[in-house]
Length: 78
Image 1 (cartoon, rainbow, N blue to C red):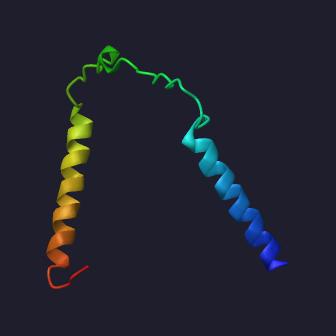
Image 2 (cartoon, rainbow, N blue to C red; image 1 turned 30 degrees about the vertical axis):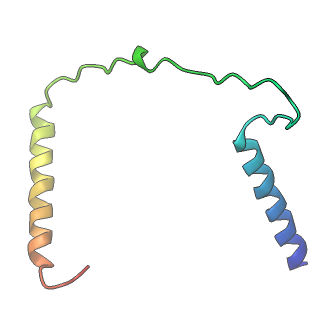
């Protein structure tokens, strides 16, 4: 029973790997498939605004907590 389950999952993972590999081609084909190129220059990042006072205060509190944690665990290698 366990062997059947192992074979089933091996087959499923192999099928998934083949699907992720992309479309196949015959070795006897003369033509070279054209690669799809995407224009990466069309991406423009959205300008970000300044963080609010609440988010600045939350960041400062988080940094203070991290600073306290590091002081407490100076002697340990964790």
